[in-house]
Image (tube, rainbow over all chains, first blue to last red; front, side):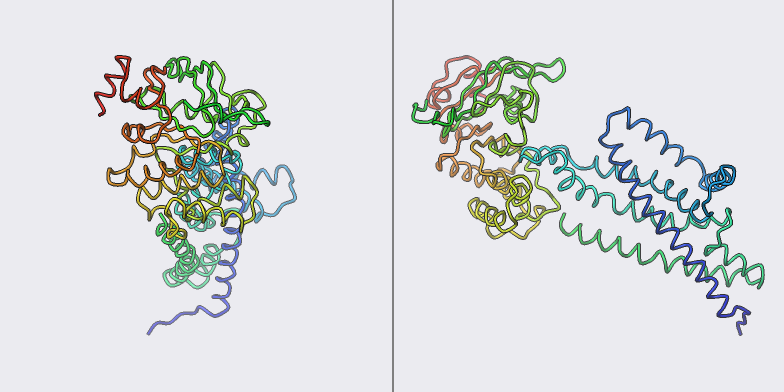
Length: 217
Length: 254
């Protein structure tokens, strides 16, 4: 018979960690997507003198390991005596990291819209902006969505790294329990299950939108 | 040629005028001094080999491509002059391309409604009325709620024609609109074009359908290497060509 010393209080503790994971994911994905759309639009349409520096910064964000970015940002925060919490630092760093990847997804989506389709829109008298908002963005969204869903799921798991700057999210709370109860397999299984339950609806939502759009294409 | 009954009213000249138009892509000169006048109500067919500059000329007429020399006037407005509102000008010049370029994320009805709503500022109801009317006109009244991907090439091309017509243009430019279609779908699009010509629409028709051009056109222009070599009535240019280039071309396609 299976026995465990895990109590309901411990489960609640895990769920609190899961809540933190979700909150960080939410802000990181929200901020990262908004920034990523701006950067991606610039990457797809701006002249080189704007495009090149943006591309360079995004390259850095994508090439330096996220863990190093967290620790560096958190240290700079202390050195500069900025009055922000580690939680905020975590959200901002992860949002920038997300933005760097999202920008490439958005750029790819925009460039996937055939120039001839855009020319047809302009030939009807639509302005550059009307073409962007009515033609380019909706088509690009359909192209970019699968990658964006993948990015979101990835970011949710990357939030685990914020434990290094002292934030107790889902993985950190399970570590704490493992240390205390010495039941690593059971507790990590529960943590894994919670990660799965958080990711699954997002993946399903993406699959459903994709299916609906594919029926029209 | 059409008589002087068309053209100038009190508001000014209603016509498309090209004056010694030159256009290059890099070092490649595709239009080498093209002059041409198309009166309101006229149907002009432009024939000639691939790469002769026919399609490029259409892009230049509604300002989708810049020109390097000469002048293009539409109703007296210089298309390529600084300060010309191209978006406004394009409202009166419809263009349909070889690739029909449907907006894939919108239904057939929405494809046609979009520009009247966004560009002309029509209400949803007005735009829908216009779109239904134009789509019914080209024989797509049954396909309003369908997405373009569910249509045949010929149907998509007719949708593109309806989309251009929904802006109530004064001129229609057709750029090889049947070239990308399966042979059995060409007829339905040509029928639509014929219907428009009979309704008095002013049209410039870049086409490889020589027999059709002879059938519907008031005048035919033969393009060769960036220049108009012959222009005149279809019986003359197609029926009794004078220049060796025209004769060779017609021999190769008829």
